[in-house]
Length: 258
Image (cartoon, rainbow, N blue to C red; front, side, top):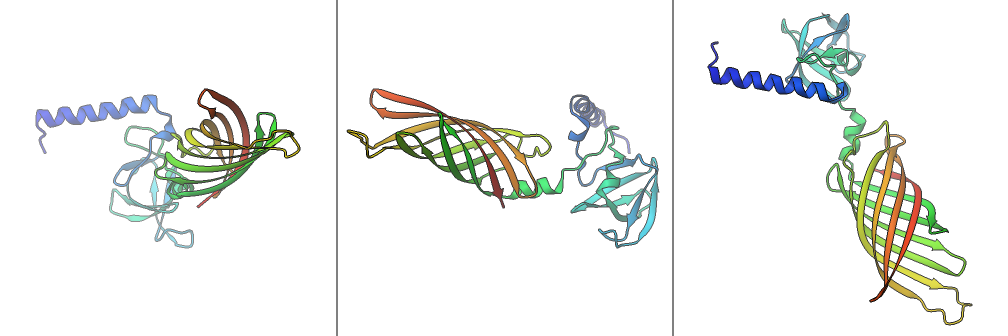
């Protein structure tokens, strides 16, 4: 079919942009999608009659043969060869293929996809609030892959007083799908700080103050449902109209999500 000059120019520009993206992105950041054709780079890939190793191999596609990705089921891909054969191939073998621009084909991990669809998280941690030991627990709800709201309650045991605090934070985690390295996140929030002096102190008065906080931290996946967190939080308590106190806390904890 003869292309018009305008259509040919658009196709050329599209191919140029894909080639330029490939220069600046790591190979594993170029994912394959349904409908895309990939080239077999290994000596061969095996086509099964179904998405499982219990299904027999009925066709072998050789090196330099092109196959089209039809759909994905867990770690199996339904592909169609140039001569019309359709069968299921493992993700391990599909990763030995090349995209149309010559980059290694990549596929998002199924466990990451499942994690990104989970919305609720519980967790608990331990650390220091100033120089005093601190225990805290949190519950979070993820609105999107990168934005969450989190409610935290904590208790600090001091030599002369005890402190209870709670706050609600808005969290932003721009790299939520990182699993092999810790993923950074930031958050800001509002809450209350309640300081209860020891009853033995003369003139001891309980204070209940408004509080703002800012948090930076790292999250690291320990498995399918567990993660470790390291948080650094700066608290600003409004003790009176003309007085504020600042506190720093560092905690480490374990979270469970589903």
